[in-house]
Figure 1 (cartoon, rainbow, N blue to C red):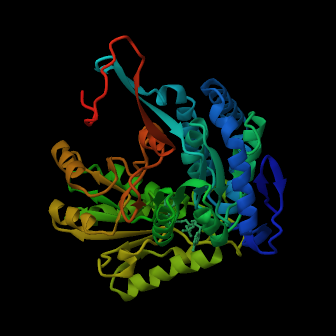
Figure 2 (spheres, rainbow, N blue to C red):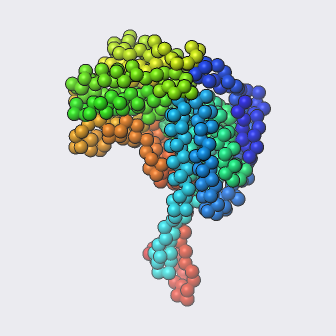
Figure 3 (cartoon, helix red, strand yellow):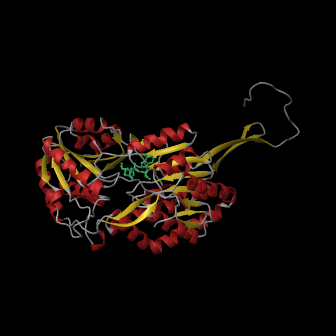
Amino acid sequence: MTSNWINGIESNSSSGRSAAVFDPALGTESYRVGLSSRTELDLAVSAAKNAFPAWRDASLAKRQQVLFSFRELLNVRKGELAEIITAEHGKVLSDALGEITRGQEIVEFATGIPHLLKGSYTENASTGVDVYEIRQPLGVVGIVSPFNFPAMVPMWFFPLAIAAGNTVVLKPSEKAPGASLWIAKLLKEAGLPDGVFNVVQGDKDAVDALLENPDVASLSFVGSTPIARYVYEKGTANGKRVQALGGAKNHMLVLPDADLELVADSAVNAGFGSAGERCMAISVLVAVEPVADKLIPKIVSRMEQLRTGDGRRGCDMGPLVTREHRDKVASYIEIAAQDGAKVVVDGRTVQPDGEPAGFWLGPTLLDKVPTSSKVYTEEIFGPVLSVVRVASYEAGLELINSGAFGNGTAIFTNDGGAARRFQNEVQVGMVGINVPIPVPVAYYSFGGWKNSLFGDTKAHGTEGVHFFTRGKAVTSRWLDPSHGGINLGFPQN
Ligand code: NAD
């Protein structure tokens, strides 16, 4: 049983409700996670609220030291965390380590909090009057994370939240809850005071309780688009600051002059890494003709070399997270065939290096996918790469810009002018130029456009610092003998 972590103490939920956590490579239930009640969630919020005044007043140096210690401990022990992630999510161990490393970069960024919180100061804005701005923490902040990055997504938020002086209640995905408790214990070992970081396992009930608790100042959500929209609407209606990152359907535009060896490597890496269960995975390759017939055999030959299997056995690609998700993803292959696409590689026939009961689906390649098909319009979130052929750059751009999502995209070309035009014209929040998964580094901000992000503030980077703080502008005058007397007019300089 993976437990809650409230006020520095581990406890099991007593709600009587629970969900199965699977080992996807074995296809067996590993344990059950308690689904916390509203009362349990409220208890965590109270703990965070009580811890807030002292943590807010802790010096920046103290907060910084805790994060430095956490970073050092994580660096030494991240192998343990990777094993938990692989056992619950299924992604291969090297990929689990990769997500931890990307999360760690945010911790490293957050250790620079004294610099990041430096305000501004204007002397003599008016005669004898100075104006300055300071940024202060919000209070108790909520984080709700998805199954596909059990460590990295919480780390997009909590290092900056804590560094800025907030206290946290994290509600992880019930499908991969183990990482959160491990992280909570490590934060305590790093010297974080009890109550500053709390974990409540659960499902919709716990999320609704977070959305409704008046002591929760903000919500940072990552998950599918319908739930992101719901969290944004309900959270903002309840007066909270909300950033809600949703689903994706990322396109890779390949121009005829691109380096096709690089394109083939990139399409395979970005299409099938983490079994396509990444919000920045490439799911549609838009081939500007006549490139497709040359490119597809190169992709297929690389796919033939991929080993799908248990992530602990050195394979390239692991299973999907649950049996239901595997079945749903596999159903799109049938739909593609019915809708007139060509199934070039069918992942349903994969021979995995793992237990037969695991939730397997091999890498799948579909060609000539009609853009009217559900396979094109819906987020699949699995190892299925669709090829759509277009006649020109303009047609490819229009396709990308007409989509409902705007998370990530990439262009592959050797033409700098075309790349620059794409960067300017594409309606997507994160753009790669000959880079298939353009996840910004920690000091830039992560987030998409359109249905991929509700709210106007992205994760980490400068926007993350802004999200977890609010500005206060101070206008001050220290009395000198020359005060101006009574004046009922609006203050002017
Ligand atoms: P999900 O939306 O099912 O769940 C996300 C979180 O919301 C979980 O903690 C879950 O318990 C909670 N939740 C589920 N149903 C809820 C409901 N009805 N009301 C309130 N809360 C609810 O997403 P998932 O399947 O865990 O993750 C995959 C999705 O996340 C994909 O759509 C993927 O694109 C998206 N994602 C997006 C990003 C991004 O940065 N944009 C990053 C990672 C994942």
